[in-house]
Length: 435
Ligand code: GLY
Image 1: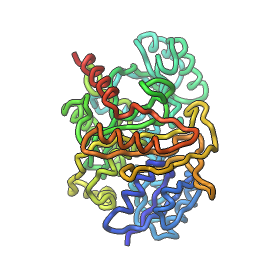
Image 2: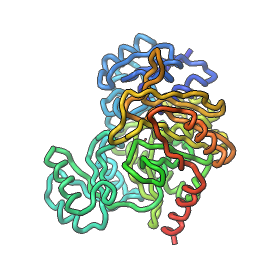
Image 3: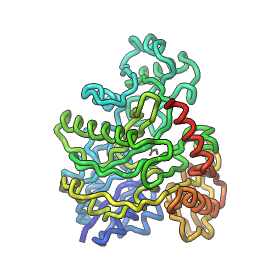
């Protein structure tokens, strides 16, 4: 019997929990969450609620349940060093140690690593710890991005044209960060189409998932503020606007970064490397790495995985990942999030969401919802994700749309995720940039 600890409480962890309990090894799942996710709780033997920096509490929960290994879902516990802490009590994890999680937690670490090892895909950038030369560097750029060096709950990346208009505005934002004691990365703004490429690794080999495209803007037509991600799609192979070379270029970047991490730290990175890439007119560039699965992107890839996910995790821990051949169904997937009205800037709080009659062919993953005696309540974040899986993207989109439309309450979603109209726009955009 395998006992597995899952840390995290979002839809990302709900789909991970599902993949774990579907294993033919019939594992027992124990979940540590900072607030209860009823979907995860339903799949778990037992649940512990606690903060992600309560490392002793996490260790005690792991020891009390004779945990064989832990899967760390979100970046927060990774940045707290939960993997190092669990290892002290003999529990290995799918998730990088704190030093390696810098891949996500420090923007400057990853940029400087790529520069040191001459890894392609690097935009023009400089790291500033003081304002010396900041204005001159900004003046030398066309459009630019200000990145706070460190986790900022999705609020640390500010893009000219999206979050601020003039060079002066960007300069003041960067200066504020520096005066607050943060280092800042200034880099060129990339133009193109984004995709996410997620891989599991044992520190030596990569187990790749399909490329996925997320939709960060809140409203139809890529309008409105940036969000955690309103929905995503995959086709089982390439995305419609990308070439085989785009995918292999991104993969090579991840391979080289993995080798550089080993060289630099002497440690094997065990966990997820999730690259956010941009296909530009000058080739594939890295926007950033995350040390965890993407949300919603993981809901596109785990449900079509044919391998035993627990065996894949065990191979990550044992360093035998190269012995497992990734197997997926070749279906397309579309994920659409129902979110509270006003999300992300001014969301309604504590309102009910009614799921009604969700069609049977729709997969449903809970994110930020609480189950009470009288129903399901939302908080201020993304509430419930609906996933359609089908032989074609068109069919998968219709399934996901029917799913999300079956939910009611003070909610909205992006009707255009995965639609032909939006995908044609992406293809046209990429075509224009390439030629
Ligand atoms: N899909 C965005 C993220 O997971 O960070």
